[in-house]
Length: 574
Image (cartoon, rainbow, N blue to C red; front, side, top):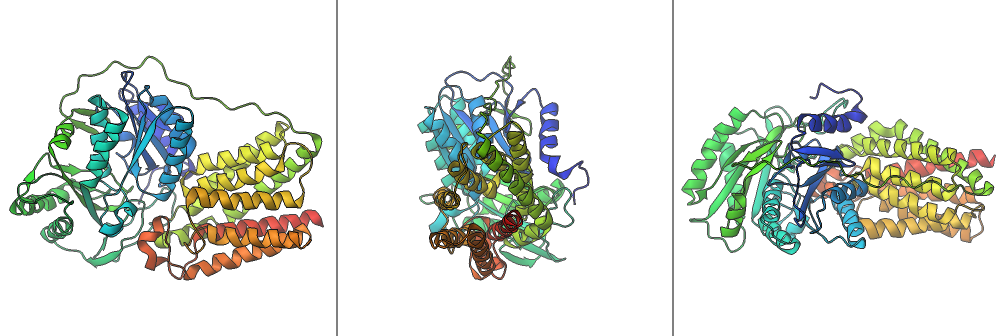
């Protein structure tokens, strides 16, 4: 369990602050994460990595000479927001484009892709390679759906070495994609991890048992077995990975980098005992071991577990792998120290608020009331939302919703106090929610609230039809952005029946209160019915059978919020 924190909600920010203070020779803080504090030559591709905090040394610990130029750092186990990713990329860009790499998780994909599109719209070339090394998270025929775990290191290091060698953006992407194609990982765990302030681990493993195929965000394993001996574990790891050799590679004589990664609280001495047998088995298979790694490279907070990664080299990849590296948590070879950068780059500040007219300012007060109701609803249900999410996910849905809704309320209040109209007040709240919450739900609630805001305007008083149109826009935005459809076991399963019922009721000339109440009931019923669905999107997809019998947390939270807003509407109507 974790023992040291102040306010759990501040843990990630305070961790980053302390990390930068301890490693100023390598990194400096920028909004959204860190970038190198040393001089980077103009014309060098900027390699930006990132993901949720809780995985140290990934991701900030891998920023430094010869490795990443910057890391976008989200909250614990939550992807950074699109704004955070964009901010880090802008601070690191040196005119040759930006290369992104990160683990293949839904929230990270949503937010990094959004940042990438924003950069491209501004004329900054940007490309991405997601890491998909976890062999247990999808079948070989669906490799593109696999998660990224400790194989992050091979892709990050290859891409960064290529950038350091002067490769252009296309070439950096090419070698990073090949490194990903030639990387395979497989992990096990003996205990789950416990987030700061949480009363229990995200998942548990019975005494004397071992979880197989776990995720690095506290997702439970997809199988379970008795704890083996060290040699038996080594044999299991090697057997699983050698059963899936990358296409076109002959095992005999192949050169590989083995990486035995500790997930947080497994002792190095234990890993050395396991690696001893791994090395023997790999050699007996005819493989040539190059630069073996045993240590912590991508952790899961305080989880007791380990993973084995095999990186299958070719001549170019091996040459790039030999590039010297000097980052806070990872050093290889001898690096000639670069000069410290003279000044920190400041990212654009907030745009001033233009006051709305009197009618819209009055509606903005209703927006503020609605945000207050959302915060109370999330606070009242945060533990239950986390419990639902922990069954087949990472257990952070309640915490993420709490962070996002509180940030939205604060931004909304500030906008209303500054005289904003309804559209500006809600759009400021939407952006704050997405930025503070991060993750998939943060991004999607940002889309929802911005879509509704665009229909409210900053002048006059909107009609009920405008609200319904905004919700319909939100559905289209969420489905375009997140790619989910009804039946995938996501928030979309509640969102679609909500907007369909709301629109149909208003078209039948029912009062807004009646229409909203019926729509919230439809969303709640659909959320409850999602318990019978097999997840086809997000982190829960890998553990589909574990999710059957439990409703989707995003659908549940949407149903709770729309129901509470209906009660607020009834109160105001009365």
